[in-house]
Length: 404
Ligand SMILES: Cc1ncc(COP(=O)(O)O)c(C=O)c1O
Image (tube, rainbow, N blue to C red; front, side, top):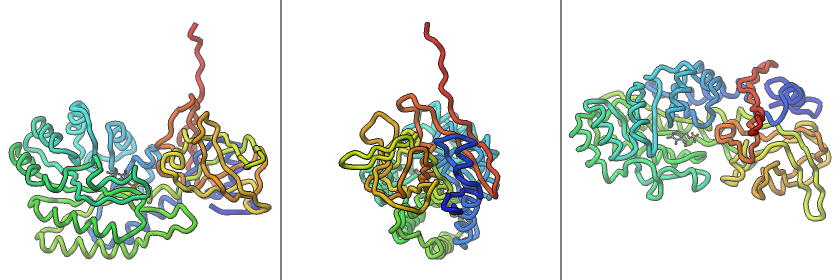
């Protein structure tokens, strides 16, 4: 993101020109940011047998998956659909991990046939997997009782979390595996999302390694995702270098005592793509009521649900006039819902109808969580770099066919 002549530029292109060409609302992803985040992550972790499995759920556009594959990433998926997208993006089955929750036997059968490695989530899944494929190699997801994240909805470890096999049931898991001759080659955990405190990540790693020591045939330990990014102006950036050094030292020491050099797996989603994405929307209505100024835009929580769902903060910039006279406003969407608000009491440069707003850090869990609520179509997505833009998903169109 750059500012020239008081206007916002993305990937070297004026946001207003992108909006004119592709219309709004529009998701814009800056390729260079994704490449930089990936490189920075890998460089920060000196442990040599490292595998990054990009969590496709954060942004499953097939071109984003291709880009991350090109950077060197593997894929982490959570549904049959995501496996298909990862394959479409060119990942080989042995580059794909699958971590699921409450799936049907049909989905389990599909996953087993597809050849991807599964992180099994429950004792019952383990049993079913054993019945369908006795003698196979599997990985298990454990719940160590540690959870973290920016909102209760994204905390995926601890007693209230639906995910994983409770660590207290590890012996039962091992005996089911033995009954069906399943080899547990991997152990996995994911404690939550948008964690900005390295100490919590390290604490969770230590807990997982203590459990890993009880499984004799491991090939990899998967510490999940959760690396956060600063959304609020006062959020501090994760100290990736410190985290990478400590995690590597910890893991190397574990491998020495385990007697084998295992693969360290991380499954970041948000960290790689969040800061690359911007949702551009046009100001359709400025309502200066006696109490508040409402800046209405041509998007809603059907396109970016994080503020409505988690109370999440996204920086917002008036792309048409980055600096100037300011006012405090509520930025609201076009859905018929009182909670369709992107920001309250936000200071923006004074908005006029027709201005372009840029909602920043929207590359993760933005389009991926979008819906057609209120029967509104989804936006287009473009990838920009060095002054070039590529349409990577066309805008959805309303189709009308008479029922009569
Ligand atoms: C199993 C698993 N792995 C990885 C991730 C990616 O998390 P994040 O985007 O916070 O890195 C998630 C997110 O929910 C997840 O559930």
